[in-house]
Length: 449
Image (cartoon, rainbow, N blue to C red):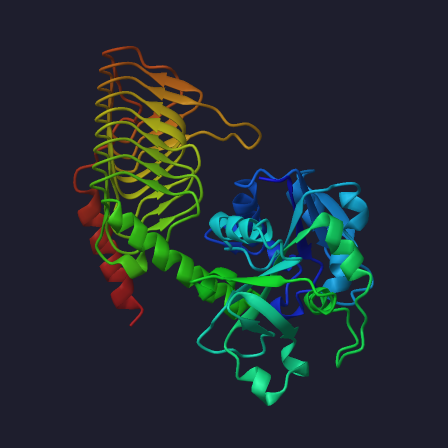
């Protein structure tokens, strides 16, 4: 393949989002839409990458972290004008250029390759355009073509009724040789209904020069769906989730109520995993084979080994690690904590900054008191230790192997291996006190009537 550069247009104001966040940074499946696109572009190993920015430049600069050069479009005079702003950033680059849109995040790398392959075919088209055929052509520009040869392109606002009857629509995505791109753009004018410089006009100019231009048509219109509003963002999320659920089941996971399970962009599920209704996976979750995740759990940044059981109503936060056969039950929360092989915390427990040894049992209502208001501290619980219900382990503290912490204890000092630690006030017994109390209260209440 010839060297590849990508120009990503992200200068739009995104006014329909009604947000302080830049439009292309709104997430789908827990990942900014721009990052979805960059991941696909990355599969082509581009030599150069330029993002054209306008409003919200600081946000994009922070997100990109130097992974792409920035070109500024100000004022914003149309898509052709936007692409021209990348000329200086590309400099002497002499390969093929992909023109993409930051709010069209789900274009597959294979589709981009198909565009580049067509650009480098024997007939050497000047421009390759990605087309699609939606159910509703709406306000899309049209591609008038004979086979894959483009005869002309027209924006919807400028199209005749006959041209609007054409179902082949322009996605806006193009592939052009760098040697042709900016020369063609320099000849684009703004004599149209919007007074803007249209990128599509480079096709008409190349045609007028007697050069061929070609269209590659995607089989999936959703691949080129733009996201411009909150409702379109929700629709994109819905489509993405539906496909991810189908893939999870095809790969060997059981989803009891698929429509209620939500995945993140990087969720990894093994085979024979069972996911009950209303489970949400945030970013960074890895699930091994044979895991059961009961209903109403939320997992993020967690790693689950083979045979683990989680929930219902459990929350795993970043750094939660469950080793083989470990189990957490209802209303258990873990963060930066490891539950060893076969260890259990069945209900009403918080494990933070903790390491729990193999086979240990954590009783209901146990908490690791890991934060002193300034610093986090660690709790280490040994193998086969038994922590009684309603215990508070005040970190930093170590509970030895086979140790027992009696129910209701507040432990602030280390417990040795095999030791029993009971931290309770002595029980006070006053025979007959409750009876006398009730009699006195009943009499007082009667006197107030």
